[in-house]
Length: 164
Ligand SMILES: CC(C)(COP(=O)(O)OP(=O)(O)OC[C@H]1O[C@@H](n2cnc3c(N)ncnc32)[C@H](O)[C@@H]1OP(=O)(O)O)[C@@H](O)C(=O)NCCC(=O)NCCS
Image (tube, rainbow, N blue to C red; front, side, top):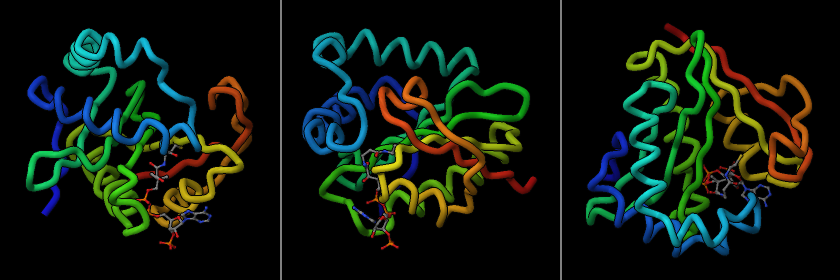
């Protein structure tokens, strides 16, 4: 059974393998991370862990029984009970409800572990799968997302008020 785990330094090789294997798949819906991300992966990974230790972000990986990463689910800019949600799921696991179930689980963790009351997420107009994930996980559209929010595309901000 895949498990949602807090990101740590030991996840680095599996996260890199996940990002490399799915680079083309992800780039069809969201901006590509760029070559620098892959060239400087360890430095970037350590920087994320430093941010996480500081408490401004919380990063999670969905790990399969064999240790491979099936998805990444991240909370950014934790402040005043609110955070921004981002996620990506491996192509090999797509279309089986993995993102929807894990976003629901992360909503519970966001309240219980991080004391959050509201989550926000932006998705582009052409990302129908992500819109569906958010809607099924209880998010509602709250306003327009600009190309600055979405790496060049227009879309919608969604929000979910969490139950304590
Ligand atoms: C978006 C993403 C996380 C979805 O992951 P997933 O595990 O396949 O999602 P789920 O299986 O939980 O749900 C996807 C839903 O979208 C639907 N869907 C998938 N592609 C679709 C499309 N092109 N048009 C309409 N609906 C689509 C699926 O049918 C499913 O709905 P259903 O359960 O009612 O049938 C994954 O595609 C991904 O990582 N994409 C690239 C990164 C990304 O877009 N991240 C989100 C940024 S906001």
